Length: 238
Image (cartoon, rainbow, N blue to C red; front, top):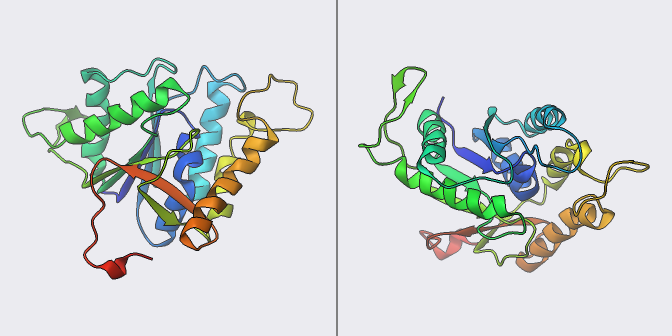
């Protein structure tokens, strides 16, 4: 199955927090989207990998993703090496996405920046015909996505472009909070973390609202890119 967009995250919930509204919009418009988690989030302070696996499936179903896979790399110790690149390349070559969305290039969690470069490098290498990958006993053909974009996470990185997601923020919030174990819950007896505060919960909306304000819409999500954003006409811009 060929897809249009592959969204990659170091941890289950990275994709939802970073770009779920954009994915929901593209899915609504008929695009095929898949999600790839690199780790199970086993070092997370709250919940368990098993709980997060169920939550991740629920979130993917809410968005309408065609699939969600997990490569089970080591949480907290994501590395950008040949072995990791090849595993991601197998997924890229299998599903042939035109666009890959991945972690922020620089962020609070050390896995995010590493996963960002790892995914980007794997996208480039996946287009080299002399690199052989075999999946399910089959030799795979080379495939390089046309675009690699990085969503914004903890840090307020200046976006290179923003997407109007005015009608899809509610879907994002529903997908994000499918990860119930990770966020604010009244009377929870588990330790507090940077993302369990009500401030963080509210920030998902007010950050989208602020980006929307800057482009004259209600809500938006921002992305950075490794190359110039090109348009065929000035009128392509909103």
